[in-house]
Structures are given as C-alpha cells and as structure tokens.
Length: 236
Image (cartoon, rainbow, N blue to C red; front, side, top):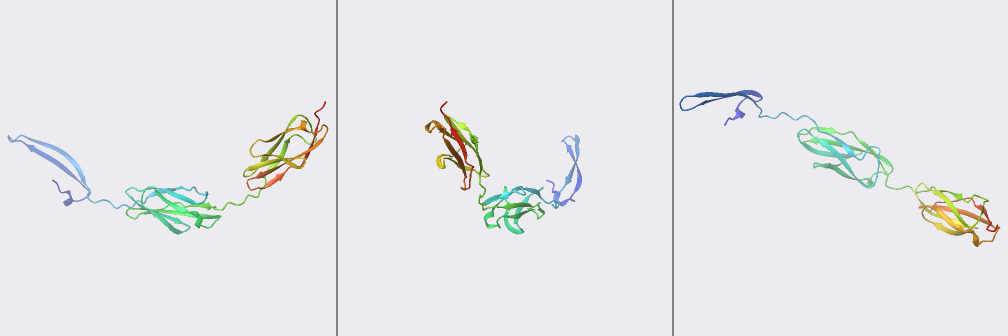
C-alpha cells in the first residue's frame, strides 16, 4: 500500500514495477504516471437557478406555490424566499418551494418576490426578482348586458308560428332572457339560443302586438330592448 498523504500534493509521480522470477528472469512494467490530489480545491462557484412560478407580471390570489429551480456544481445548501424585502421562508430539500398566503398581503397591489440561493459552503446567488399583482377580492360586476331583438323586425306582419329571437351578451355571463308580450311576461329562456316560439293563430287577425325582451346577467344587471310592434295576419 502506498500512503499518498505523505507525498507532495498536486504532483505527478511515475510508477515502475520490476518483476523477477526465482531463476533471475526479469521484466519491467510501466511506467505509468499518476497525479496525487489529496486536498480538494476551495469551491468558489455560486449556485444558479431561476424562479419558475409564478410568472412575472401575473395576478395571484389565495395561497400559491413559489417554485424555484436551483443547481450547484458541488452541493446545494438552501433557498431563501423574500417577499417585499422581508424574509418569508427557507427550503433545503428538493423541490425548492414556498407556500405564500397572499390573503394577508396588501390587496390590489404589486408585490416583489426575491429568492437567494446558498450552496453547501456559503456561496450565494440572488435570483432576478419577480413582481406579481395580488387580487383576492373580486370587483362587483356593474356592467349590464347587451340585448337586441333579432327577429321579427319592427312593424312586420306575421302569421302562424313566429320565432321571437333575441341576441344577448355580457362581460361575465347571461343568466336569463325574459320575453314580454303586450307588456306582460310571456316566457323566460335561461340558455342559448334565446328564442320563443309564439303561436300567432291564437290571436285576433289584423291585431297589433307589442314585444320586448329583458336580459339579466349573473349579478342581476339588466337591459331592456325598445318595444317593437308586429301585426298578425293569418287570413288571406
């Protein structure tokens, strides 16, 4: 056994082996060259990584995971999470992440996420920060829907079965469309297509009928169309 610890470190050594049998025959093996390295060089390379979630400029709410990728040439130590300049948490085990409860933060405001990486010997790296917008309280919907009567046309003469068709849209969602005949509620439609089939034969010939519709969104904002008149003519 060769105790290399007593030799000069970081030096190449040449090794020969001489072999002789009992009759005096000899052979030399080698040489081979080996480098003695008993002392590891200092690790002065900092770790690298990135904040992979949440994306910068995103809107966040409730509790989210801040996720980080981190790598070191030797060994990672830990990851520090910093919110708006204040230490929030630390993780030393893969995957590197932190549960951030955004409900305790200032509402409708930007917040800055910083992350510092530290390897096993103390080399550190500050990752490029991420700015997110916290929004935990939904703004009330005050925008009424849009609605028009698509058919029949105003002052149209109709007969038989008549389709009363409305076109409705909303910035959030339509809840229902109400059809009014001669100023009284006739029918309610809760899903597309917003249409009512009216049997005009049940009414007196050459009579005038007033129709309008109301559209309601999921916040009960509503819009009413202008009334239109149609004329029934079922007899030739």
